[in-house]
Amino acid sequence: MHRVLSHRVGLTTCLVAGVLWCLRQSSGRRTQQLWLLRHGESEANRVYRHSQTDAMIFDAPLTEKGRQQAAACMPACRMLRPELVIMSPLTRAIETCLGAYPRQHHPDATYEVWWEPTEQLLAASDIGSSKQTLQARFPDLDFSGIPDVWWYTRGEEAAGDPEISRSHFREFGYLETERYADWRVDLLVARLQARPETRIVLVGHADLFNRLLERYFGLDIWLNNCQLYPVELADDGVPNLNLPPEFETKIEHPSVSEAAATPEAPVANTTQRRMVWGETEDRMLLAAIELCVEGGEARPKWKLVAEQVPGALPTECVRRARQLRHQAAVTTRL
Image (cartoon, rainbow, N blue to C red; front, side):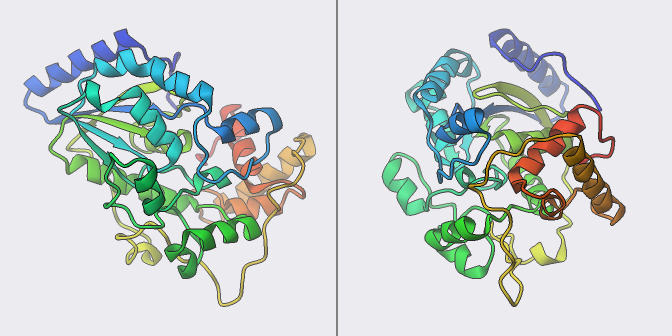
């Protein structure tokens, strides 16, 4: 797995990336310069940093520190001269985008809200607000291109009602599946490549960007709050859009129904105490991951993993498994 020595990107790196992009454009090969910007610190980030628990804050906004981080990005962002600025519909991403890329600094750029780059749903903060709420909150942006419920849901009722979706999460604590998140990244890349613009900014989230970088560039990178990272998309890197059968009718809408005839048993309650990981818990987690891989799953089913570690939250299992991967305890790509 390719590793990078430094993940910090400043003015010099942005300038070098721009020069290299210009040289490639002059060679006749069409590439798109894509700058990834992770959102600033959110209220959910702040709580999790101190307690390692889900704060149960739906669509968490930026903290004051997060707003300061976005403003500090402004000088570097201003030099990029993007043609297209895309943001996730989650409030923390929108606030970061408008703080780092104020429209008056980029009068020629097009600003759009896309549902595809929203964060993988692993916590309450990854459940968003309806587009009507967002339109009232950010009247200068256009939310007509996203569904009313644009995040991952469980069940057709939740797919049409934000409050039902939130109620289901409180009761069952469901997670977005790995296959659905992969499909969403593929759809995002295909949509980017279909655009005529060649200088694009994408404001989004850590898990989503890690999945994008790993899936298309072989980079296992986790961006910090308000970290800027440049990559190039070439038009010969067409993503594979062979969707699993259960997703083929869902391209127009981000939700997918996985509800059985009877309600699914609740997963670990999101208000549980913080999990203390020890050697025994790590062994159980690794055994569950290996079981999933041996069963033909490219990525483990986190609900199954969580069930193998008593007392652990699903989100804790995800994060601990990725820590183990970073420590080279797991060699199979999770």
